[in-house]
Image (cartoon, rainbow, N blue to C red; front, side, top):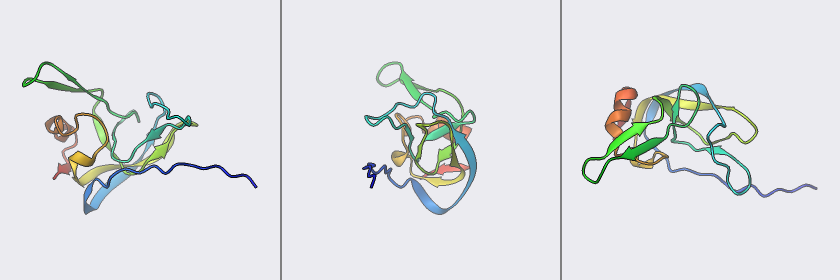
Length: 126
């Protein structure tokens, strides 16, 4: 019998309401860093662009006057964790609903909230 131990992947629940709208999109493997097992996970709660890539937020400037730049405009937020080790995969993407920004995946989400809200007007931050 073949046995392979697969570590569980979990993310904190980021939905603030049971009512939301999501559509299917394709999460691409390009730009996703592999873990120690070679798996490439796009975690639930990750901003995703229309290209299917995870949106990266960079910070520049100095303390007190930081500016935040998004790698591309977000099209939504991934609803579940998906493994893109073997290629691009379908994933549910939230486009309307209430979320808790502190629980979303990625750096500087809370700090860049105003920019994200402007790009995703139907997603409300609690």
